[in-house]
Length: 345
Image (cartoon, rainbow, N blue to C red; front, side):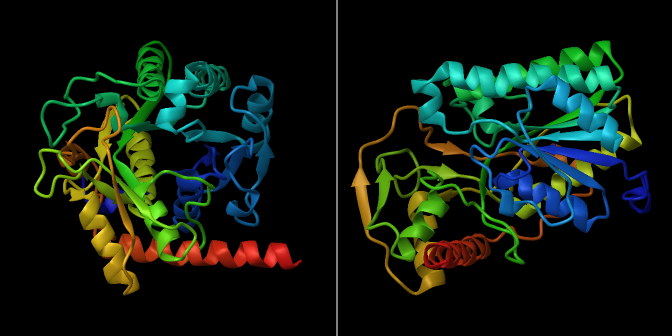
């Protein structure tokens, strides 16, 4: 297919579930920037109403509510669903597995049923590298055995399975995108990681850089990596959102094909390298507290992005650690200002 054919597909109305959350809100921005009509459903348990742009139809509710979904599909003439709604905190999934099997698996099942009932032909699913568990080989390809080690990973893998089985039986094609470590914020400052108490390293580090935390914990210094700290593949959230738009175009172009692809850069950075980047960007020095390893953390988790680059015309625009940190820092500063303004109001 010629690249000129990309982006010329019919731009159907897209429902973004979890569109008031971190990654979902960036997908809404990417779709809008590319000229797609968008609506959002979010229960606002972890999302924020301010993250949904003005002019985007918003439905406050649960993705497990089949009656609400049917109404949205009918009202908006939905032609595709991007599914981001769900719970994402791995330790919480271990402590409260039934919450994850409800929010991530049971609700996804209801959503898929509503999609099939309404005849919506395309669905994109926010999956995760946690489906691989602790892989024996890194970089990780899509064919690496899926062996989740926590309920979060299992809840996502179960949804992938449901999508595969449903697509085989009904007029539906889908794309499951397995994210590695998502970080950063919209370069224009329109959205970012807003969740209080988030556990993502870059989020934690920029909070510390702004004085919102006293220190940054480094969990484990004895890994089989160059500096002894865990290595991860960090992908800028805006590059990830762009991949979703291209994946939707691919589904529309070839409706008989479904896709499963890793989303990462294929390059890893250690915990200490990330903290060094924050120091570089801010000109400060973070206080680093060395702590024991956490259970279930692999030494290194890096994607092999060969498939997505061969399948989509995806050209990452922000594959630079310092840029990811700078955008996260700018958003954190904006959040602090918003909080101060709300307190003063």
